[in-house]
Amino acid sequence: MKNFAPTVVMDSICSSKTLTALRDMLEGVVLNGTAAKLQTPYYRFAGKTGTALIADGKRGYADKIYQSSFAGYFPADDPQYTCVVVIRNKPHAAKFYGGSVAGPVFREVADKLYAMAVKKPRQIAGAGGLDSMMAMKGGKGSEWKSVAAALGLPYSGNLTSSNWVMADVKGNKLAFEPVKQQSGTVPDVKGMGLKDALYLLENAGLRVVIRGAGKVANQSLAGGTQIGKEQTIIIELS
Image (cartoon, rainbow, N blue to C red; front, side, top):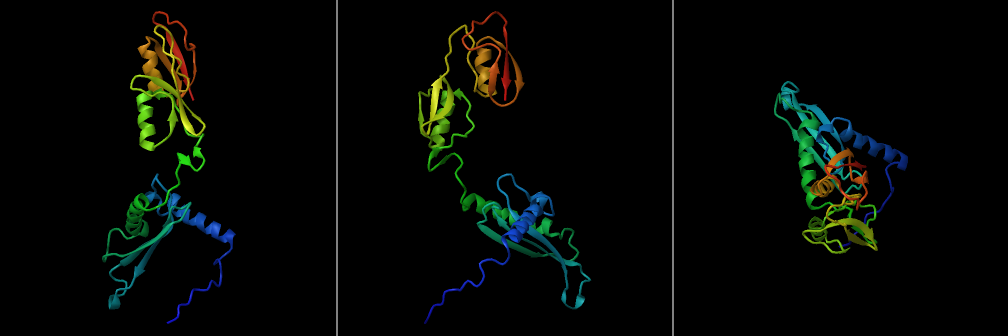
């Protein structure tokens, strides 16, 4: 017996320009078209819905039997799986469009495969170490310690259940520096999220006015300033 390897006659069925346009259209079906209700925030997929009235032997088309289909692939930006779902509906079915009948089946299969088998790029660490573009906010030491342990991230600095730290990335490690907290003075909360900043400022006896969203970019009273009676501090977040 002889084995014959397949021979590639054509590397592509169309030009790269045509292929790009086709992929855009298939993604558009899910983003803005007949499968828009099937979108998920966790990954993107692309495909085409299909709805066809089919004949039923000698009865022809009298019973209004439709065939619903969805053919697609996922993830759209890094295709790894293709799935085709074809469903023959009952006569006079209330729902028969491809996006309403076959599409949800595709989505359920895709969800399970994506969760179990799809190779996903790591967004926290890569071959070169920690990504310096990570969103970093200062906060409670014990919470940062839990995060680092859960994700297996290397870090330097002392993290305890009672201390507060500022977070940064140095030398492919998370680097933590303790926040200076002196009784009777304003804590320096720049770089912290709102929850942690509010906790420190209010426990120091300050009234807090908040502007913006994100992490603290500026504070009207500098860290280390002596706190007066019923004093107000304005924090700007961005």
